[in-house]
Length: 218
Image (cartoon, rainbow, N blue to C red; front, side):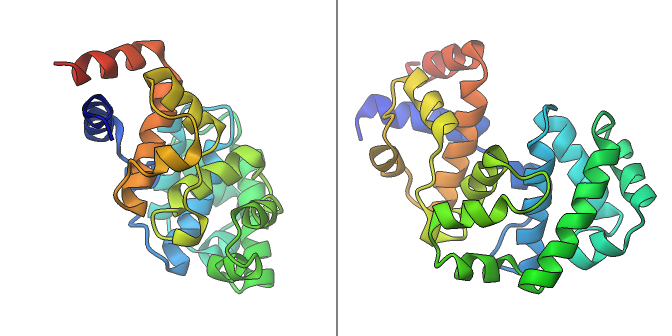
């Protein structure tokens, strides 16, 4: 890694390297509860709504006791709508409340509430995992990418998962736009997930790109 690339990496991780799961208070590990919470967050982030609102809505759902598939399934539709509303997730609250209930039911029925079973069914292949994730209501290609970007911190089988948005962010900073050399900049799966989140944030804003570049040369 060049000195300039290391400087960019340090700034990225320091300023923008919190994962979306971390922002939502999810202590991600290879266990059923946090993996399900990440799926919920990916569902919320899939809508055309700010990431801050999606994170706030996830926190409200978990605080209300809907951080497990059983808790989500057993909540009334109105309870889910109300929790989403408290997180200001209002434009999509009714449809999302239905999708979350149906998704929890699917996870319980097909994979016994444990996304590790889904991973094992896919034999750890990220494309097959993405295909199965997209069977959940509200999860399309974007949601599957969000889930995989974050879960690579605890699922080494899927790493590196660096989708187009991540690689676009890297390109804007002059970092490698190919998955393997970019992944080699990270020292662990956790750091790779943090780098991915940072590059997604950077990809959205030229101002942020300029700020990171400027800070890296100081």
